[in-house]
Length: 184
Image 1 (tube, one colour):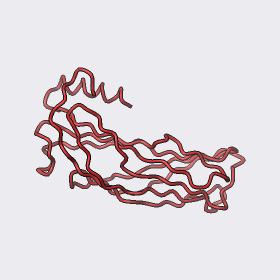
Image 2 (cartoon, rainbow, N blue to C red; image 1 turned 90 degrees about the vertical axis):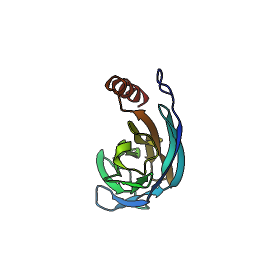
Image 3 (cartoon, rainbow, N blue to C red; image 1 turned 45 degrees about the vertical axis):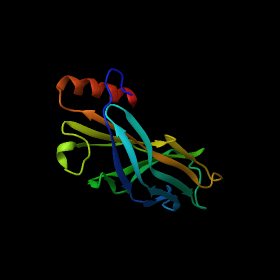
């Protein structure tokens, strides 16, 4: 609940995401492992001024037999494409940017935050009323996945945080932006 803001009627919204795979390399350019993002299809119920948290993708990181702990710190990043649909509408440019740090202890993999907003005026398919906007931001849970030569497959999930907000008044928008910042 966002303090000071009243809730509104609920709306059921379907969403889906596709799967993707990325093979990552070590400092010597040998294959160090694979990172897979598993798509999900679901329906959530959103209510104005309330945050709904749900899983929007699963994540698995599989170190290969050639994975080694790095004597020096090495960082790299890559993108994993995943098509996201919300209320039947494709979200253009959605995907996951992943960051990896390798060091003497093994490594960590993280997924950067991602966000998008949909205004009710953008499509007749959106079930929420004119003057409202659906905001979605995502984050990896846990925030970082730790790898080592002995860890085997490590998994997590990408959480989606859906929030329906009123965009009809300037003062209310400022209040809601502050409330969303406090959620992060």
